[in-house]
Length: 367
Image (tube, rainbow, N blue to C red; front, side):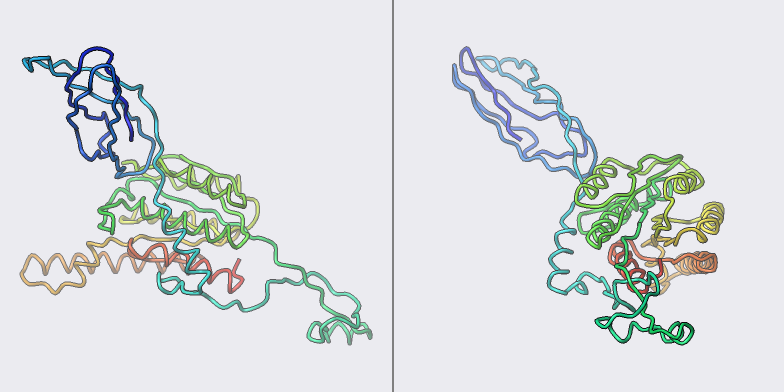
């Protein structure tokens, strides 16, 4: 960030420090400079955002020294300005590069071979001489006593709805390459990557983010502009310490998504009440849409299960972790029996797991 300080009178010495929210760090935090008489200087500070969202930069605080250095006067220059910090989109560029070079396995994405072509049956019609022989429908031919061919049309784009839980369950934090991030940050990264991949496949993508009500909503759409809408909708979305109202989100989904869609719900479930609410809504959803429930694992739980207990306290800790793991397995089984696809992934493996399952759905024509 560049600041300009003008001096119309005699030379002055000052210390300058930017007025920043705690999510933005300045390097250096303050700088001491001298401004010659009747001149203007430029102060350049490197500012790094440690979180996404909308923030207000408050200008520059100055401490001006008296000519003899006996006292200092405080001043402030620059009008407040709002900036928007967006999620790190580096992973989108990495995916595009690896997809072009057929190396998606390097980031954990499993490519699935399609079980059929990119066409779907449309109707029966009289056979023409240039029709492929494998398109002849022999049963219809025998019934009509006339060679009959199956006509196909190109598969139409499908719909994907991203549902992101931003309630209290998503406040928990886990370590990552860029420091500690919340469950919601991980879910947003996975949702944006999945949206990017689906849009590249020609699918329609929409989004619903909710906590104690629907907080963000992006109607289904296609193209690069739709990706920009998704990014802007979630860039300032933060987890809230409230109970998630799944019923509000699913009601909004039923009102807005008329076409059968792949509904990807990213959430974190840790108690019976929340699990029961989630299960009841998935049951009601399965007949109309294809639900893909993405459950984020607790890294601490995995660590407690992996490490052999060295004392009594760790023994009881491992036992509690095993009990929770068994409970999660039972919830996953219930969701599967209700007709949902389920992804159970650690936060740092969430994005490739979600994208791989989407590609499997496309390849197997499950939607």
